[in-house]
Every structure is written in structure tokens, then in C-alpha cells.
Amino acid sequence: MPAATSKTELLDVYDRELAKLLKLIDPITETSACWSEDAVSIKAIMGHRIHWLDLFWHWYDTGKDGSPVETPAPGFKWNQLKAYNAPIYTAADQEDWAALKTRFDDTATHFRTRLDALSEDELYTQHRYAWLNDWTLGRWSESAGPSHFRSAAKVIRKIIKLNA
Image (cartoon, rainbow, N blue to C red; front, side, top):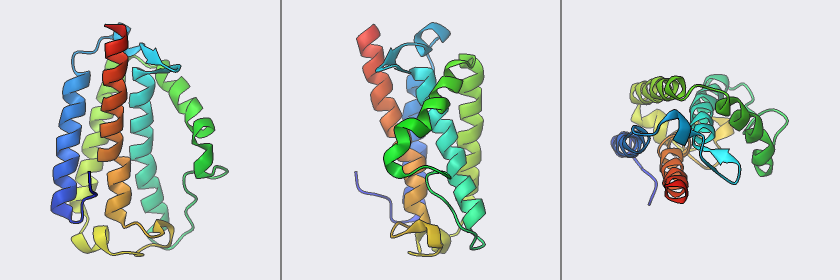
């Protein structure tokens, strides 16, 4: 799927992928939320998505005034995501499923609201902020939001199929 190139496309893909994910997780119970593949549960997947939605805004808020941004996080390189994500998964596994779903809903709504408040120029001007490399802010937000929703849905469907 090609990346969005406008704010309208970005918001459309955000809404579409979020709706698919919410429909998929809606009937999941506390018990089935603990089902996993490769030791990563449905709870862990959703906790991970919450974290990365928030992380995007941390990068943005830190870097919008020119302050240095360390992506993905201080002390981690992109090839160390397995180690970075492990405590996120562990923490999510300890949460109540209903509370985790509510937190996801709140975080996804907050993310969408903040995206909508940004201008087309801010989202799609290349090199607008130093930390963006060759991707636009819109492309980074799509990676943190809709692309993550799509990958979560794919893995969750696989977990459900393995356990049903």
C-alpha cells in the first residue's frame, strides 16, 4: 500500500485502519487477549501500539523547536527494537484487557486529534525537522499509526486463527 501524500489521505487511511483494528479486537475477551505467538500476546501487541503512538508525539514535541530527537529512543538503535519493545510487551501483559482497550481508544483518539490539527505543510514538507531524515512528518505519523494498526491486525488475526 503506497504511503499517503496528503493530510486528507493520511486521515482517511488512519480512520480506515483504526476501524478495522477496533472491529477485530472488540470481541476479544481477557482470556483470548492473553493468547500469543512467539511469546507476544494480543495484549502485548496493543500495548506496543499505544506506546508507539505516544512515542511519535514525544519525538514531535521534542524536535519541533529544533531540539535533538533520538529515534527510536535514547540508547537504542533501530536494529535493537526487540530489546526496546520487550519491557513494553511485559507491562502490557500485566494490564487488564478492558483497561488496555480503553487506553488504546483514548490514545488513538488523541493521536487523530493532534494529526488533524497539523497543517498540510507541516505534515508533508520534506526535511521540516532535523529528526525526520528523508521522510515527512506525515509519513512518520503513518508509520506510527495506520501502518502499526495494519500490522497489529495481521498478527492478531493469525493468533486468533492458531487458538480458535
